[in-house]
Image (cartoon, rainbow, N blue to C red; front, side, top):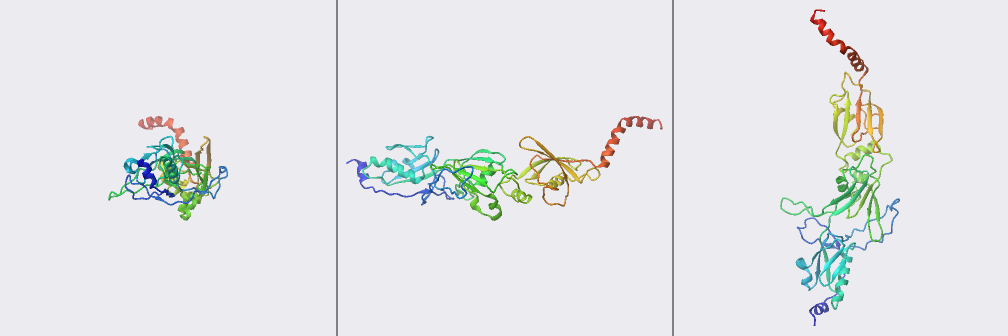
Amino acid sequence: MNRFCLIGWGLGTLALPLTLGLEPGLAQGQPLPLIEETAAPVLTQPNLAAPQPDARFPEAYVLGPGDRIRIDIFNIPEFSGPENGVHEVLVDGTLALPLAGTVAVQGLTLTEAQAALTASYAPLLTRPPRLTVTLLSARPVRVVVAGEVIRPGTYTIDLEAESSGGNGSSAGRQWPTLTQVIQEAGGITQQANIKDIQVRRQQRQGDAVITTSLWDLIRTGDISQDIRLRDGDTIVIPKAIAISPEESVAVSSANFSPAEMPVQVVGEVASPGGVTLPANATLNQAILAAGGFENSRAQSSTVQLVRLNPDGSVDQRTVEVNLAAAANDTTNPILRPNDVVIVDRNFAATAGDTLGLFLRPLTPLAAILRLFGF
């Protein structure tokens, strides 16, 4: 009797629901453990303009090009183990397997891939094989960040970039979080609405959309709002209609806000020029960072605030200065990157400069007259 027939005769069918568990502390190249998962919910195509707030992502990992897996078939070492059972998903989403040929696995969970491989090998044996699938290394995570971030676009995070401790142990692989990807994109802008951030994930049954609030994260410590992302996710950060100064100050201290911003302070200050301020800094902070007003020359009651808008237009307004005021829109507004603060001259400085301008041509003549004793 054929060897494979004898093997197949002694094999039983084993259906194991498997999913990916990315645990820290795994050695390089060691298979990632698989744990039991529940069935993924059936998702319908949502209306992206009005996302379903209660939608939840199925957490089972789905395979794609670049994933490396290990296949183990009980009692068939020729197609199993670290030497013969390691395969990489090709760019077309398939596996090229000995005997079984080409098997499409893109978009399948590990459980579904195991079922597909079992079905591929079953006709070659008298009974279905006992087969397990293990994820060895995940492909890089490629996500899109759109909306109110400093550098919107596509970002790729390599899950194989692991750090080692002093004892040589690996820190392990982790899925990138929402805040980590926003940091990669330079942080949020000052117009970002962090209470209604959308994360969209493509599924075979339709796109899943969830709305998350980083405001709840920084105010209440709700870590569930910092969603762990998957390959192909899209993050959309909308623009806020209105943000209170109190909210801006609170958000500026979060790690997903830019750490610094450039501002120009010109005119009658001690050190005019460019200053670098913390994100969401106020007008008062900019004036003090430039050394404060020139006491004998500055018009300290008001300043001009010039702002270049994203659409290319320029806004200019007069702000009444109150160095004792907290952040507010009237006397101590929160600044944006590349704002220009202009400190004008007071009346005495303006009059003195004007008089000096008229007298400047007579200065050489006065010097000559003094030489002759006049």
